[in-house]
Length: 512
Image (cartoon, rainbow, N blue to C red):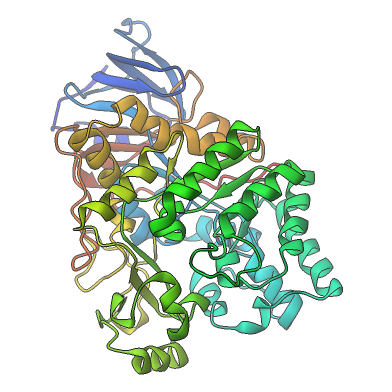
């Protein structure tokens, strides 16, 4: 038996290998799949959980590397349904936040086969996967623009109005077929950026929902505007999801309900609750920040549209430069010259107790899932990747990339007591994985620590676990993740990033 003492690793090269038997001993083991929350041991081998219990026998733990995790919480790594980082740098920030699987399902990326091949070739610390990109499929049908599996290329679409109009019948059939092909190639459902094309015919959204229902694939939607923000909207954005779910039977996921609902969150959550009670397959996610992030060329950031959000140009900050937009004229100039540039948009004041209560109400909503909407890390000169750790100075992103899960747990477990630790793992690990079960059978082994589950494991120091990133210092990693394993391979060890660890694997949609 190899012994690894607390804060003192031996046989590190053995601990790195996912095929080795690794015993996490004496921690508080939490399994949201069964509701168990007890002091005990957890044994991993060949990328799987092979035993768990109050005290495993010597026979069970023979030849195991033993890691003392007493005083720590051991649970399934967090499953992020909404991450746009697509880089080693971004995934490392997410690893320090407890994430073991980071999926881009709101926007998706196309061609999905190329996106997965690129990630496999470059290596990823975390598991990854993609939905079929509705926006890129529409751009292909409307503009003849072949999709490129690059998030920054996809951001560039957001300022092109040609794909944002309603489709002709021929265009509709073309992009529906494109989505169907992407699902066949391994996309996990369909990502729908409807908020970026909010004037499209609602019949098109129903057509997507029917396709999703037929393929047994979930949709992940950034909804169009609410009726309170834009009385001229073709249909209330959140109501549209619930109507489509009821009419088609599709599984429909409402992305970042906090940012699209803003001050109207209570009405939207009330609708969601009624829809779920009536049997519709509607799920919802949220994150604990009062600012969003997107490409500055987005439809809803046009100066004449800001009033619908209750914001002004000075509420927009450019990520790469830190520039706070001075006025409408400057906003128009940036949108013209750099429409794909990442920006941060303040929609709620986190220092205002009433606004903070809105964010907490979304987190407290029954079965609300935590998802980050993590954004790419950028450096000056359009540098978008780094294998250095700690990250080089000058990098910037939205702090949610580094801190969503730690911040949510800090707020809801440690500060307010609204969640137990078991509930935190249910919302951060178990429930997001269950959204994917029917479309990607590989997800069934994630989000819990039953025997045979994937050994995607996070070990947390409960009194330390917290976000440290801010809007001014956005790439500071969270603290309190003692160890993190992906497929049984250590990515974080004693709080330190292992820079040679790239165990991430693709989570694919099942063949159709």
